[in-house]
Image 1: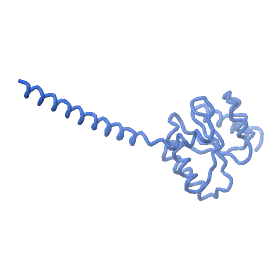
Image 2 (image 1 turned 90 degrees about the vertical axis):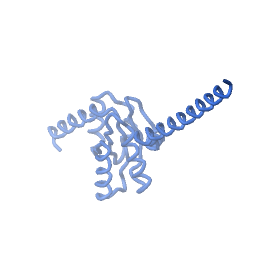
Image 3 (image 1 turned 30 degrees about the vertical axis):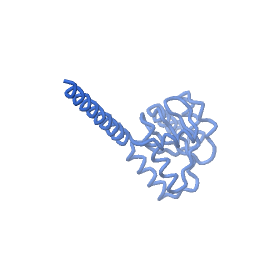
Length: 163
């Protein structure tokens, strides 16, 4: 790469980092092209993107966005998951893919400006999807309503027996 291409690459990466409040840093060593393509496809379906860049270019783009907490993770073959505003779907894809293929390894991340550990990313990936949580909430609410109706029915019977 010549200087102009590097500067253009850093500028593009800076904009991508700025547009994504959630970043996960991964080590993709040991992944072949087929697995990398599958990983990118799954991330795209979750509304995220995967970017592989040179560490020096990533460091310059992070510095331009005043993100210094990820500098320790910029060693070896790394890629960035740009998860956007919702950190959960991309973390779920990362967790599921790593369980299935043992790669990529999460090195760390940034969620809403705060640094997170690989364990935190794994916990995020273990949270059920929004639809599942809503279904669980609706089921709980349905159970409470059923109990409430039972209490009202018992109260009605008690009052009718007293009169």
